[in-house]
Image: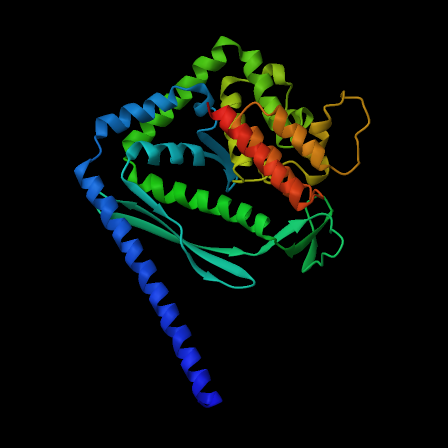
Length: 357
């Protein structure tokens, strides 16, 4: 057989194999959707049951404290249901199918299609997300090359670099979560969302009324975990923490949720208050919080180590703190080996299981 014929036969085999694989995947996806629709029709949701389950969740202070976000938009402070609220609402609704297939991928970007389908009514909403395979870092590791550089709002140089797989997945997860919230809440009755948000506010008002000072301390500590210290919060409020009103406490709690879910940044929040950039206090580094040194102690400028992250994971008291500790690896560009990453991954899984009990 000639070389040309062999090449032709080989190409044809590859084409047939690729086509067969695509056909199999399409058939599997179709069968899965049909099976879910069959189950949904056999076990339809009960709206009263959905309402009771969602409102029961809203009565839990630990959930209510992160169920509403607040952020500046167009010079005004807006509030809305958070990503955590949307995830819970989708779960309570039942028979909602969430799909996030990758529809395009190359060296510079990845495109995902997020779709939320109501299996009972066959109503679907979708949104395409384009994810650039880059991240910004203040420092470059050995061997890293900056694609471009810019000055941030604090006059610091920030470099745009190629994202590794872990960084890309973190970025992708944040964008997908926001899309699921937007699309999923469109399938939840609007009056139920309004009732749930009212219940959440009532839950937190009752919780705060029992010990207002403790509620303030918990919130200030939560901000510290995100790198926003007490001095910055006082600057934002314009008065001491002792004068914090219930409305301000609610607003701060929403800002905390927005910051944690990457809905906004502290710089944007301060700009919305009309604070000149020069008067803003530079956000403290998360590793400064890790050190837990006295207020008048000198700040440790040494690089964050993998052991610091490990201790943070062990000391976490809730799932959000575990996630925040894990994200320190990428935020601070922590040097570590594959073995250390695997060990931390095991510890992360163990801590999440312990805190979910």
